[in-house]
Each structure stands twice: as structure tokens, then as C-alpha cells.
Image (cartoon, rainbow over all chains, first blue to last red; front, side, top):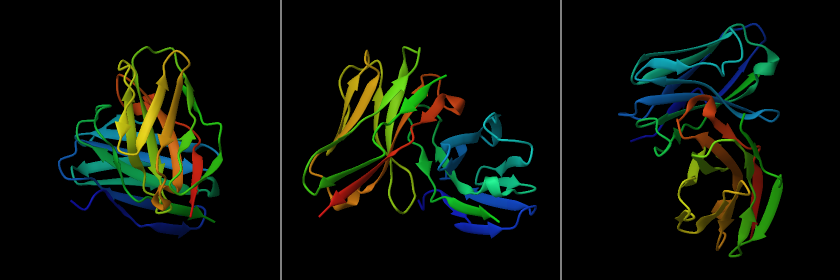
Amino acid sequence: DAGVIQSPRHEVTEMGQEVTLRCKPISGHDYLFWYRQTMMRGLELLIYFNNNVPIDDSGMPEDRFSAKMPNASFSTLKIQPSEPRDSAVYFCASSFKGLPTDTQYFGPGTRLTVL
Amino acid sequence: AQTVTQSQPEMSVQEAETVTLSCTYDTSENNYYLFWYKQPPSRQMILVIRQEAYKQQNATENRFSVNFQKAAKSFSLKISDSQLGDTAMYFCAFMKQRGYGQNFVFGPGTRLSVLP
């Protein structure tokens, strides 16, 4: 398997623009996670899905952020409108059954810069 | 709320030597899981080792081992025979027994440099 795939790897946009980050989990994994990593706040869980259904979105910072998983092989994280403080590395991860004993496999991340 | 602390922002070690990274955590839970993740310059997070709190035996994975002191809420990572490829950020993480969601808390990380 190719592992968790994220696109784009880098994104530079201007304040106010819509940004869409994409993720393809490992085939057969039931759980998908979105994380944000910043110098100030470290690595934070934003939202996670089980079988395409959002289970916990309490980590989503505000209404400008939304995530969808239309099918088992694709998820998006959208920011609209984007702000400079959204600049971060966004990771997608997937795991088989979402148990603590299951390994989460991370994608390479998308580095977002909002000017 | 759970917190995870890594008191060493940066460390360095000579190749082939042994290094220990520190992690402490705060929780009122009795059953939980602890993890060490590695983030090399490629940025991808990789699970290094996992410890279940109800297991007294310290987890080991090849050159990586932990010293889990439940009463002290301490979870250190020992890397033996350090290799250049071990150069990375290392994150300690805590998870309640119930599983994911906001129960997964990461520490601020320790930057490890392995010197030739």
C-alpha cells in the first residue's frame, strides 16, 4: 500500500481565500483523523471519522473549518475564509479500527501558508 | 484534563551511544496508553513504541525501550546504539483507555540530533 496520501504538499494562499486539503487513507482503514501542527500549540487533533461518519469534531477551531468524508477513500478539510493564523502543517492519519492498540499511520502533511 | 510534558526541547548524542528522552504526564485515569512518535525531517509522524498502563513490563522495540513509572507518571524513551537516521523530533503522547478523540494528547516534542 502507498500509505496515507495527502495533497497538496504545500499550499500558499492569501487571506480570505478558500483552502481545501485532501486525504486518501490506507485502504481498509475504518478511522480517519485530521491534525494540525503549529509551533505554538503543537500537534492537535481536529476531527476524526469512523466509517465516513464524523465522530468528534470538538477540536475544530471554529466555523471556518469543515471536514467531509464522502467515501471510504477520500476526505477533505476546508478552510473558508482562511486567515494568517491558520498557517500550519495539517496531517491526515488513518487506522484500522481506531483502538489504542491500532497504529495510526500519518500522511506526509500539507504545509499551509496564509499570507 | 490530561497534560504531557517533555522538559528537554533539544538533545544530541554521538552515533552508537545511548540517549534517554524524558516525558511526564498528568492524569487521574488509571488505565491509559502512552506512545512515543518520531517525526523526521521528512515530516511524517511514525509510531516508535506503545505502552499500556496496566502492563508493568516496559515495552521494547529493537533499539527502543521505555522506562514506565506509573506512580511517578513518567515515561522515558531510551534509544540504544543511536544511528544517524534517529535524528528527528520525538513526541510523547497520552491516550485514555476509551480511545481516540480529544483523549489523544501530545507533548511539545524533543528535537534529537545524532552526531557522526
